[in-house]
Length: 217
Image (cartoon, rainbow, N blue to C red; front, side, top):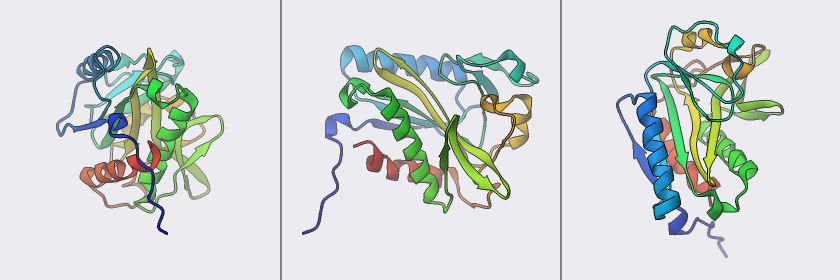
C-alpha cells in the first residue's frame, strides 16, 4: 500500500509573497514587524517573503566591529542573531514569519528546519550543501577548501519568528570584501553561478517552494 506523505495542516501553511524589485532594508523590517504583530495578536497566517535587497551590510547581535572592513554600503543593525552579512542583487532572501508556538516552541528545531530547507533546495541544482559544527549557515566543498553559499539569521518575538535565510544565486561576490562574513575569515563565500549552475531566480524560488512542505510539516 502506498504511503501518503504527511503535510502540514492548512492552518500551519504560511502565505507566500515574492517581491520582484529590490526592497529597502528598513522597509522590509517594518513590514516584518507588522506581520509578526498580526500573527501574534490577530492570529493571521505566517508568511514566507522572498525578495532581494539593494547592496547593504547588516550586523547581527554578535557582530564584532572589527569585522566591518569598510562601509562602502549602508550598514544596518539587524537585531537578529549572528554577525555581519551582506545582502544585494542576485541573492535570494527568504524572510520567514511563523508562530513557533504552533510548532512545538522549539527554536533549535526551527533553525535546523531552515537549514534542511535550503539543503534540499540546493540539491535540486545538483549542489551538496552541508552544515558545519560551530559555523552557521550552509557550506559547499570547493576544491581543497569550502565556502559558504547560504546564511541564516533569526529573530523571535513572543515565539513568532522573523528574519530568516539568504542563498547566493549570482550576487557580486566582491561585495563581501567589506566585511568578515559571519566572523569567519578562514573560508570564503560562493554562489550557484560560481559553482557553474545556470539558474534563474525564478528557478530558485520554485525549488524553495517545492521543498518547503518536505520540511515544515
